[in-house]
Image: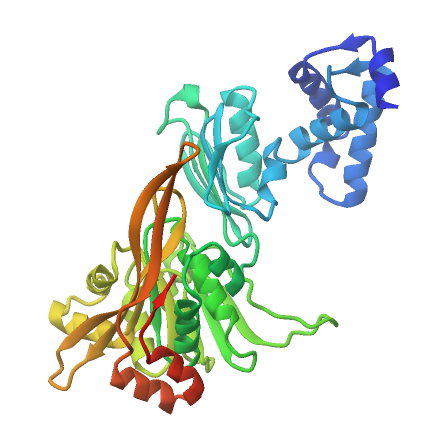
Length: 447
């Protein structure tokens, strides 16, 4: 049919011309179809587009009738060519630097330009406004910076005209969190960490130790934390706190659709009325009343850091992430955030946060776009109250080599120190079996 359609079409035109014509026709006669999202209405809209093309014998060179209908529908009711990238399982980020400069970050770490571009700056703005409509947010001259979400795991940040040049259209960052639920074998295959390092983090948290994953944006912190949380026993109660949008989906169901674990997911809520604001601090305070075994504070950015460390020091297993440049720098970053709540002596706050989060894992995205846990440290509290931070595991870079014109960073994971006797004692008291604990006692290198 597609071949005969092209052969019989009398009006072979540019796609942009046909799009404009069909948009006017659909929006004028069947506007209600565009504003609804049921499968039936989608099919109706496609049938109207098909009829219009055939009635006026319209075609685009290189596109069959079915392809043209799908492309037109995607442009009008969905998100243009972005739609096919948004819901793939191998993509982590879509970065729009300009209407004609779009790059995609794949799960492998590769950053590649895509073949498609918007037709113009205006076209880019129109499509992004549709994306923002999902979260009820508007991009205009009075609000040129917008942060929204498309779904539980897709975040979007937009810079519009007023803060960027009009010729650019829009600059957009779309982040898809853990699109493909990674398991331990995936991290090992990608060389994110050694098996022993991953087991140490998951088991230390399972048996009561609070931990913080630190690093820059896009270093893999949230993905790693999501996996650690997924390894907790189904019978333990987990309470998660996220800022604005929910990225975690840790509820497990059996083949009958029955929930088999014990999870409460919460998100903050902003309101123009300060009394109606639901902040991370409020959710943390509430969380302590619902009897959780573990608390996850998705990211510490402000005064919630003080309450997170308080929760960790009162017997709850707490996981969190933070932006810092190393394991040691993480504690000083925590002190800075805690001071936003209480202007306490820095040494006192340092003692509090090091007690609260004895385990720190530093994740980094390297120059070749590979992600590695660069270091895992333990903070041991000595008998005199002093702190000793010891490196347990480390990724040592041994070479930077070029292959087929691409940089490849070569390195190996090494176990630097055993866990301290005090950590060993706590893990044993919290129920870690001796045969598991034994794994973290001896030395050895890990390629």
